[in-house]
Length: 243
Image (tube, rainbow, N blue to C red; front, side, top):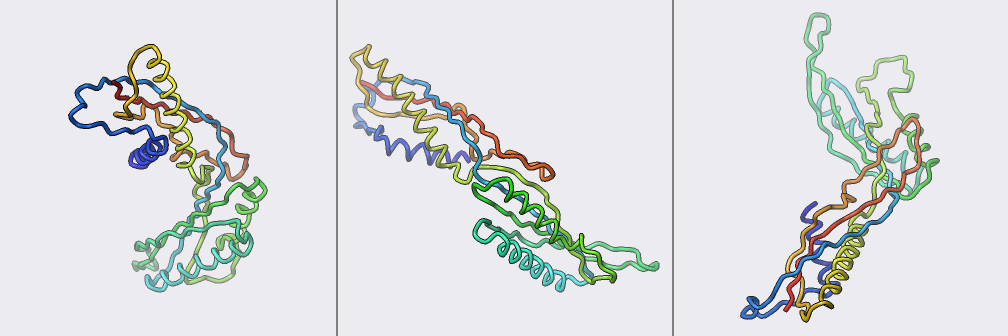
């Protein structure tokens, strides 16, 4: 995340045209002035993430792996059918482990697999989120009543649900730009009181990160509520070179 923010800062500096590279022989004649730039913004998360855990068991590893891939394909196709272009589905790896189960005084080797689907919906009302959750519950094989033993058992579990930002870097860029402008305005006020002139930015340091990129607002899947607005703030220390 630090590398991403450094990249954003570099882009902003270039866009604002605040970097002026001075001749090396004259650097010793420059003075440094630092100001603190701050900015804040109120935003409402615009993306919903639901993580679906798929579990499966069977007595043959290769066959379980095959059935797992079929199960993932089946639910993904069903969800895409129900929600058309509203839903983005990212599939995870299938992880299979084994354990022994006592069966008539003999140890029976059982294979258990786990995989995750990440489902994301952009800017959609609560009704759509409720519908997605209810659909997953209805499709859960564990909720189906069967009168025979299946060789491979699968079940679904909604392991996590939260709101976040679809494009946090875009918002972070706006915040950083405002913070630099705020810092520059303070510098301009100081320069008016002196005979010094701005050469360029010497150093940037983020004092308070906005944490937009890692923000998550938990969703209670039994009582879904709208995402709430939250205020994000950032502060930068900007060191300028003047002469």
